[in-house]
Structures are given as C-alpha cells and as structure tokens.
Length: 375
Length: 207
Image 1 (cartoon, one colour):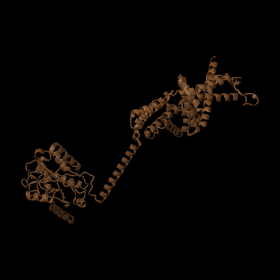
Image 2 (image 1 turned 90 degrees about the vertical axis):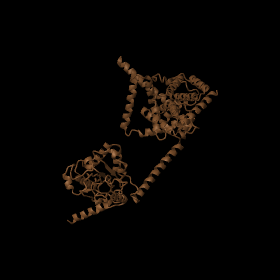
Image 3 (image 1 turned 60 degrees about the vertical axis):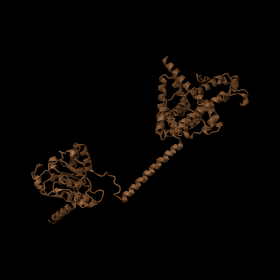
Image 4 (image 1 turned 135 degrees about the vertical axis):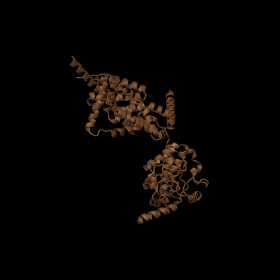
C-alpha cells in the first residue's frame, strides 16, 4: 500500500528504501521507512541551510549524495523547498504610511529628539508652576486686602453713556432705554414712580437710573442721602410735592422748563470741593435737577457697604429740560466737554447742575426717617 | 566580489541618513522609512498571528513607537532588527490583550477565519488561497518554529541574528528551524491531500 501522492508532497516512503548508505544505524541492517525519512530530512535541512548561506558547492555535493542514495530524495527536497519558498512572497498589505504619520503627528512632539522634548516638558512644568504661584499670590492678596484686587470691571454706566452720546444720539437713547428697562420701568413713567422704582431696585444691587424732570424753582427737592465714605456720595432725589407733579402729565404747568434740551451726565466722584464750588457757584435751590443713581441704595445698604467694592457708585444725570427732552430730544452738539466733565466754572451755573450737598440732604432725610419711625 | 559589501554599506549609510533626517523632524524621511519597511513588518506580523486586523494595528503601533523614539536607535544595529523587535513585542502584548476569554469566543473566532478563507477560495483568487493555506499551515507550527521559519525564510535573517533577536542559542534556533520546515511541509501536504480527496469526492458525485 502506498501513500497517496499529491503535487506538493509527491513522496512515497518506499522510494527511500535504498536511502541508508552505511546501514550502521539500524540493528540488523534493515532500514525502516521512518529512519530513512529521518535521514533524508536531515540531509534536506543541511542542504537548505547551505543554500541560505550561499554555499553552492556544498549544496551540490549534498544533493548529489541524496540523489545517489534514494530516487525519491529529489522530490522530497523539492517539496520542502517549495513549502518554504512560498514564504519569500510577502503578503500584500495596506499602505499604512498616512495613518502612521497622522498618529505620529498627533502624538506628543513628533520627530523631536529627546533633549528637546525634555526641554519642552520642563518648560511646560515651569509655566504651570508659575501660574499656580501667581494664582496663590492673588488668592492671598485678595484674602488680606479684598479691595486691592477687584476682578469685576467697575460699572461706569454714565461714562459709557456719555461716550455713546458723543458719537450717536440714538445709541444714547438706546442706552438709557436699556437702563430703564433694567429697572423695569420706561421713559414715559411719572417721575416719582421712576424714582421709587429705582430706589427699590437699588436694594437688589441692580443698576438703576432715575430721571427726574426739571422742576421749577418753586418745587423743593429733597434727597435721602447716604453717608459719605471715601469721597463718595450718592443720592436719590425725590421731588417734594411730587404728588402735584405726579398728577400732571409731562407737560405740567408747575414746572418751568428752561427751554434747553441738553443733559449732563457725570460719574465723577462728588468730591467735597466739587460740591462746594458747585453750590457756591449756582446758589442752588435744589430744584431743576434730574437725578439718577447707579444702584440707588437705601441708606442702610450704602452704610453697610460704604468704602467697599460693593459701595454704590455715584451716577447723576442732570437735565435742564428733561420733560421736553425726556431723553428723546437730545442735541448732541450741545453736549460740550464742559457739560460732560462737570462744572468747571461758575459762569454757567444754571446750565450745569452741580452735585448736591448730599450731607445736608442726608440730614434732612434722616430727620424724616426718624420722624416716621417715631410716628 | 567586493560589490556586495559596498552595496550593503551604502544601503546602511542611506538608511542612517534617513533615520537622522526623520529624527530631526523631516516628514518625508519618515515617510520613506515607513514605506521601505512596512511591507516586511506587515508580512512578518500577519504570518505570525494570522489575523490581518491585528497585523495592521501592530504595524501602526510599532512604527509610531519607532518614529517617536528614533533618537534611541543604536546605529550599530540594523534598523529592521530594531523595528522587528518592537513589532514583535507589540504583537505579543496585543495578542495577550485580545486573547479570547472563553472557549466559545475562540471557536467563533476560528469559524470566522475559516469562512473568510473559504470565501476567498470561492472567489477564485488563487494567490490569496495559496497565502491563506500557507498562513494556516504556519499556524500549525509552534510560535518559536513559526517565528524562526519566518525570519529565516521570509526575511532571510542569518541564524546568529535570529539567535540574538530571540535571545536563544543558535543550536536551539537551528533545531526549531529544521523541525519547523519539515512540519510546514507536512501540513501543506496534508492540506493538499484533503483538498484532493474533496475534489475526487465531488467528481465521483458528479459521475
């Protein structure tokens, strides 16, 4: 019985019966097929090794020996050669170049030599340490001196307003409208309501602007003031006899508009000198004022936060004819630097309403509050 | 007679220049370096593990590691040896991670491979079938035999280099090589016999 032959391994073990040359490895001189195969394979391995090492002469000799010893040796050798020879053909693979380069690019510092990479790493570490140190320092300073560092941009509504007024009237109107909308009121509301609204909203810390139409000289004005602290003063003005005023529409006859349709805004701190010069220069009656306050704080609120970053900033809108202009007929060309920067001279006291003597108003307000409490 | 060593020396010098350029950040040099070696690494890994998707992942990972550590390359050695060493390590790690957790997984995986090979055969792509048969036959060898056979016959590495690469004595390498060769021949012969029998059965059924 013979082993079935096939194209890859066309070897019949019986062909190796005469392969054993010396016969000294098998007892009794009979060579088994297994032994013959083994010896043939040893020879084949030697031939393939010699081929790989380029020893052509050795290969030739070995093949000759093998062929001489067995007629099936050559076929067995060829089968082995064929099986390992297939390995020389590399399998086709996909081109991975782009993917590899993309991954390398995405990785940290591609193609950068180690010292440079180390330097970059050190640099990053130093930057992180620096940032941490700065943050720690800021935290400590803020803890020790809360006022020294303020992260929030100081609110300067009037400054913005003035700047906007210089460039474009409509912007000014929008700004004012926006401010009023923030307070929850609108431009056409009666003045006292505006003032009350503003006062109420001040307690919640919102920006509030109260506009008051210019009253006649007969109308007295009082302002619940707040104590001065660090050169600040803030006041919300209310008109005395506002009931009369309230009952009137914007064209109230009890008011005597000056015929001017300008307004002046200033957010400069009402220093004592400024106020004094203003009062002396104008000989004020406290009429004719439209007042506004950024966060028209109640006395209590202002006292509590006096001198801190939360202290209300003064904001006053002064108008000479607010009823008629009602912020709707502003003539920007009349917004002179002098008006915007405050009363620089006593020449035009009637046009530039100075800062109020808030301390006096405060005393008046305190007196009223005390009386109310007593009642 | 002296032309071959000169060629080898110039090849090595060229390769070294490429490595230096790639190490300095030259993308083109890196591109060339990949193109020169990716096919041999892919062939080595594919025939080692028998799974194309694993081979692709391993080749990518190996090249990424090599290219990001080019400054570590020791020019006394061959670049391909270094690359193959890294690829081999990546492959072993990957196979360890992807090892089926249960016998069911293993069976399903094997079944999937069988289907793929069969469909390739039915498609009449003779070359692919041959490769599949060869890969299947290689899987019948032990890992050591397979690796040594591949390095010796596919990549023509000398015995001493394989010995260094695998960290085993040359005698052990030779022993694995000799056994592996004969085993490979036997497996291929068995495959051919089975295929021949199947063809005969089909012919008989037809008649």
